[in-house]
Image 1 (cartoon, rainbow, N blue to C red):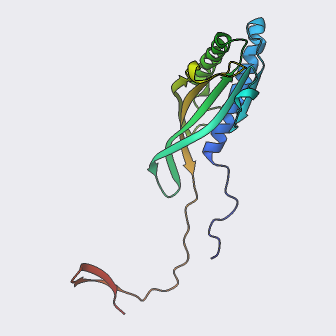
Image 2 (cartoon, rainbow, N blue to C red):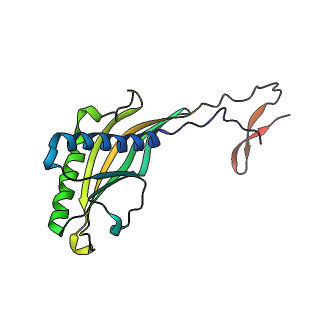
Image 3 (cartoon, rainbow, N blue to C red):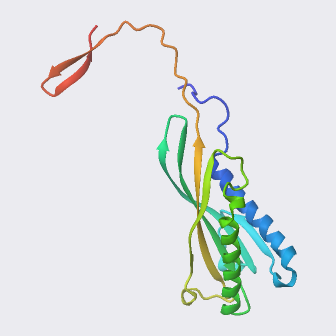
Length: 196
């Protein structure tokens, strides 16, 4: 079967958005570290699609993951819908309270960043992103998580309205058509058949 998609399939919008989310977090938190000075002693690591073992958590590890997408408006050349990302925050500390307070500090800062009108389009050109929304966050009950680093965990759900582009199929040339189709009544109901 010959290939019908011309050219290289480009990086999809949901991939570009995932990468932009991670880059925004790194840039803004690095800026806050510089601005806050002693009030921001933590080193941060920002990852994408990583599996983080609990015993390897640094003071602050942030992981951006793609969760799912639902499309409601679709045409032959594009689909528009809601894409959901998880921003997972792992923190460690000298005790469980220290870790939890650190978790909450970064939970608040990241939520603030993505509620800012500055990042409604994730720094992308207007047209294919319809907005970003911090939908919810949740934390893990500390009684269900025990380790020597006193690891704390929070998950932010960030929704992005994305228009994914496609390529319309141009079809094949129709060289000749001498076939006619008729609608005939059969015992199964009306049926289209060739009348040659």
